[in-house]
Amino acid sequence: MVEAYVAPTVITCIWAFIGIICPFFARGPNKGITQCCLMLTAATCWLFWLCCYMTQMNPLIGPKLSMNEILIVAKEWGNPIEDTIDITYY
Image 1 (spheres, rainbow, N blue to C red):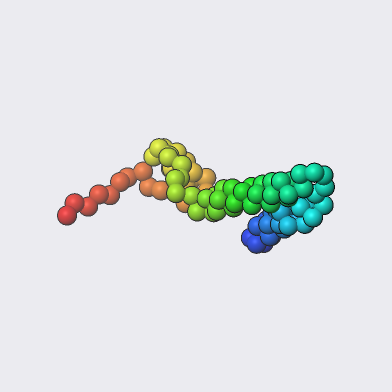
Image 2 (image 1 turned 60 degrees about the vertical axis):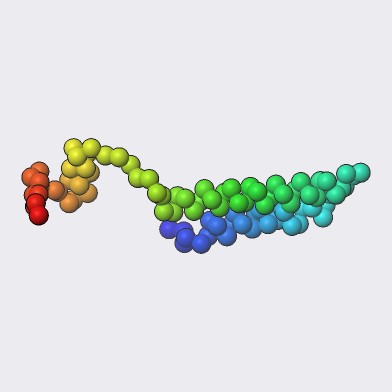
């Protein structure tokens, strides 16, 4: 399996290439605007990707399962849960 740092490194290198190297190849009468657009596009796309990637690492909202679904998943994964509920009142 691929290490955890490979995907962020590859995506960062791609956007760094677009934002740092590609502006040097801009030509035409609007060279400055083209360079600025390339750098801003690379920075914002990379930042958007980073935010999406990081939210998937530790999601704040998980799936909402019913008790029946939880029992089925637990049984399939080899951790059967007793169907009885032990509630202790204090």
